[in-house]
Structure formats: C-alpha cells, structure tokens
Image (cartoon, rainbow, N blue to C red; front, side, top):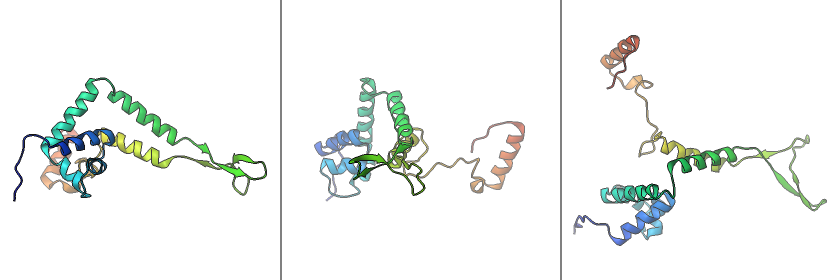
Length: 169
C-alpha cells in the first residue's frame, strides 16, 4: 500500500530534525529519533519537507545569535590549531611514582597530537567552505580537469585565457 504524501512532518520526522540539529549527522540523528534502518538518515535527508525544516531550524539558531558563523568557524580553527600542537607524551614512572615525559631510546622527547580532532574540524571547515558535494565527492574545477572538456570547449578556453577573458561552460 502506497504512503500518502503529507505536507506536514510526522512527530518522528520532527524528532529527527531536532536530533540532526544537535549532531549534524543524519545517521546518528535517525538512530536517536527511533529509526531502525542504517540508511534511514540518508532517505530522510532526501525529503524536501525535512530539508526545509532543517533550514528553518538553522536560520532560527543563527537569528537568535546563540551561534554565529564566525563563532563556529573560529572555534573550529582553534580546535585545528590545538589538535595539531605538539603535546608531550607522558608515561607512568613506577620508580618516581609520577608521570614523566616519554622519551625515545636515544633520550629524545616523544610528542603526540590529536589527529582525529584535527581531521574532524578540518572536515567541517571544508564542508562549510563548500569543498565537498552532497555525495562526498570533491568538486572538480573544470579548468583543472581538461579531460572532461570537448576539443571545442578546450580551444575556447585556451583562446579566452590568452585574451584574459573568463568563460563558463
């Protein structure tokens, strides 16, 4: 039996939207909202009513000034900077009964950094900057990918470049 297309979200869909605003991850939000299928988040994000509701919720958050784009971006860049800092690695010294900085066999200090935190923050910054399509494929600049241009387009591109003209395909 075919489902009716409604112009309103169900309570479960509304819960998904609210959960999505907390984690910004469709799969996790779907699970928290009570959906069982592992691909429910993807399917819910394809629903135009859900997309619209999420955009409304995002704009309400920004409008309320609780979270601004500048605040988020500065926080993410701070996370990247902190995660990429060298931090001394410590180990427990049973003789001194305290933590001491770990050292290599030739007595050089060992440092560590939080690569997972840095990668996640950089991923979020990249998403904000529009570096990834919705299907997580990196966008390809047509000027850098000449293999996809026809000979005619390529010749127009070369001609326009020599004249200093920008061209769209």
